[in-house]
Length: 206
Ligand SMILES: Cc1cc2nc3c(=O)[nH]c(=O)nc-3n(C[C@H](O)[C@H](O)[C@H](O)COP(=O)(O)O)c2cc1C
Image 1 (cartoon, helix red, strand yellow):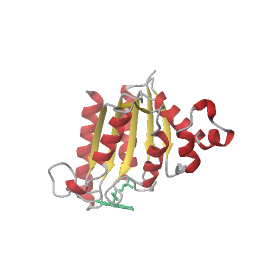
Image 2 (spheres, protein in one colour):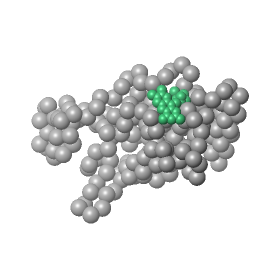
Image 3 (cartoon, helix red, strand yellow):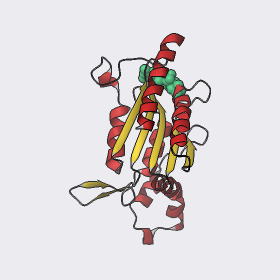
Image 4 (tube, protein in one colour):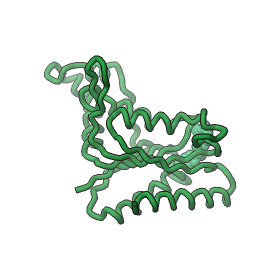
């Protein structure tokens, strides 16, 4: 059975364009994959704890040497990694905050990026260990011009970062759907939303 893990990271529930487009993607994708299982994580409603000293110690301690305290300190990471590894498809909805991803999503990435679990290193090369095959990323940008070749492309630390870190963890196919001008007037937003929806339709039916 296919499993999709959806992660929402906007601090907003009302008026969030990334979440609304995520709902649209989810509906379209589930209609194409009616038997699929949906797992969800709302990083605003249930914030992920930042990694701490004990979490890092636990990450670098061999499993058989983990103390009760270190097991507790890495339990959330275990849970999030198990959830990710159970999913063949990942859907992330993400706003641009100060030219990058929200800290809520960075906290999730810090918990799931773990040596021996989601990546390995043999002294020369890193290898991703995540089994998830593809990720769909729905981004909302307040202004326009962030996409490759445009005026603000060099200020876009969201798309290149997520592309790199997800590839690093082993997710080979990463597809972006970008709503630009989300802070513009209503007519511009409506045009841009319609465009993103049509690219979602094409992608889901491909
Ligand atoms: C804390 C914060 C920081 C933001 N930083 C940027 C930014 O750097 N560049 C930009 O174009 N828009 C920025 N915006 C606007 C958001 O990207 C835009 O409102 C987007 O629609 C938010 O996603 P959401 O609608 O899913 O909540 C920021 C908004 C907030 C709340």
